[in-house]
Image 1: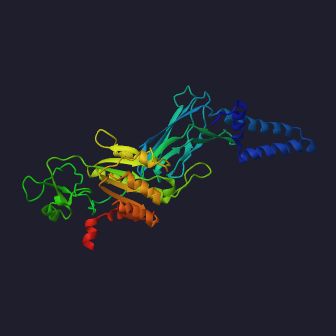
Image 2: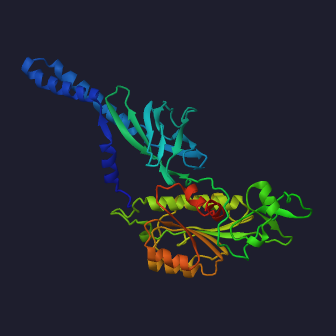
Image 3: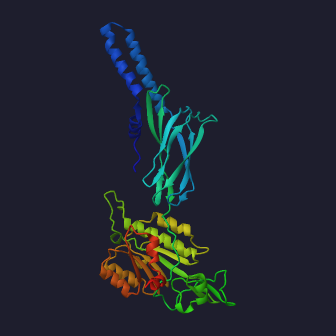
Length: 420
């Protein structure tokens, strides 16, 4: 933004000075006294007129000069919050002017997606040379929608001692509060159609039951069915597999398609992306699956079709919180995913309403993956679904109002087989 000229800044400052109802009453009284003085032959009314006008003018000058030099510092604890949880904003105000500041009303600008009682009364401040030139206050904020939200600037309405005039100030620049995407707790699944040469995971700290020197752990997508440990499965009530001595840390990819056409969104006249319930569902699903796999001990590659999300979640690498922050601020992207996606043996893909051409691209990109589980928007054309099924993908369709955990549970081939 181009800086305003001195004349423009002066005009903006003058327009911020507002008369109170009392100030308006003083001016009307001055006008009446001025008009009545010659009619009633009372010269004293001219003195009343001058006094009233002088008080209003003095008040305007006072609020114009007061609070003109103030430093604002704003911080949040914590700076990053899950949706629905609280953060505390602390605002520190320092008066840099020699003149003291009277008591004033303050409010912080809050965007959509953030709620809080961001208003109150600012106590009087001494001049910059005094010990009482600083004050701080705090208030609670709640994050309602994922994203990086600007909090501020601080609005201060300064009133003169007589209550005739107040000036509307805006101090400081906005500070960002990050709200993470919502995450659902997902249960372990055992999808059908996984490879006989699946990925494995490190041995857990508990051993298998009933056999010496045999370690069993929960079945994970990509494990070979021939390695099922039936005794441990019967004891635990869930599929368990034998753990071999030589193991590699399992890896999986979580891929979210942010292509605007697939997500049913476009830019509005201001250049911002229109809200898409499908896209928000995809982000929540990707966050939930990523957190689930990390908790299960996987090294997770989290990527979008563009470059805004590209995390390698492992010890000494990116953290789960890094990935969640990326998903908090991700937007639709028009870049071609073929140049960015890194195929893994096991891949979990969250798609919108993909076209046939888009389905062909995704199938080619993940052609080397041995197990691909995909969530696909329910209105995807049957021809596109057929392309993915021909590529041996395991598909579950969803609608934007569906429960993410319930859609994820549909991948459980073992339960589906038992129900059949």
